[in-house]
Image (cartoon, rainbow, N blue to C red):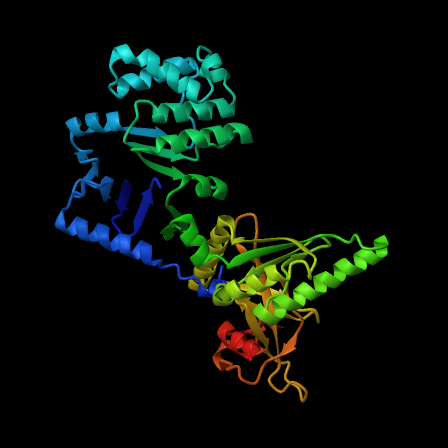
Length: 443
């Protein structure tokens, strides 16, 4: 079942129970646009879709919210809604003086369960979240993990049609978290579950469809496989080696290193990629999506020559959901910085400094023209995110000549002799289109 939320400004948040280079990520995801169009059309036509659990068309009386067909503005509707909805808030809302069992009795009554069944349902819920032994202990003495489990039990009691879980496994140990995941997985049958989480592992395991938000916007929505294949960096290939067992240990190590070099040359020649990580035991490669057509024949040949190359195991998979999330968050930061015109100071190895727009990847350095390099030099800037998520410069490449094919936008540079309060101000770098650099490198 689906949940559609159409806000007054026309943006959409859509949930269900269910990396190329940053410059290539399209945040106006077609699935997001399609769902937005569908919801707007239903709002205009005043359509009530029986397959949608929640329809919220604004937060004022003019646009009533419907939950499973019942209006939140009607007392009768709200009475019905309370029976079919379960909520686990981000922070536990529990009474310290009540026991876990008494909490479940209370919420079972609110949801309209028959009095004769409340005791058995409460005991079953306590058993599901492993709180049977603590059922009669006051909730005020529960640990943080126990309180989260009780909140999950409260949300799920009575088999509600719609369940909203806001970071339900926060504070749980790994074993208990895995158990709660099993509970949520079982609860998905016949129910619409909206789950918010910062754990990409949790989203990957539990969700049938995933929506990622950044800077207040829904950036993408789809299955885990779709998001990884579309917004990930590509494929991850791990090559494990057998290890040197021929002759002396030194000889065995020489053979292993020879196998490493042979495999690296094989990848470079056929796919034009270099290892992302390597040590004596394995090589890890990131293979871009544009090499996908070559991969079938490539890995067939690699597998045929596995013994020749001393390979023990070959593993191939998609990028992680964590990487997809970080790339989208970084792209959102770039978008925000570009809109604000934010600048950062890049300090070169020579000691000189230039100001560059936040997120700029390739930058020309004004004032570096010479007979040897008539167009001057450029650097590639490496960006990372600090603890607050803001982009910061993590380093830069060595200075290289600007290729002759690259078109420089003169207006991008500021006169290097400008002054601020009588002092020489920082020079502004010349931003170079990454697509031009990519074209030159491919040639």
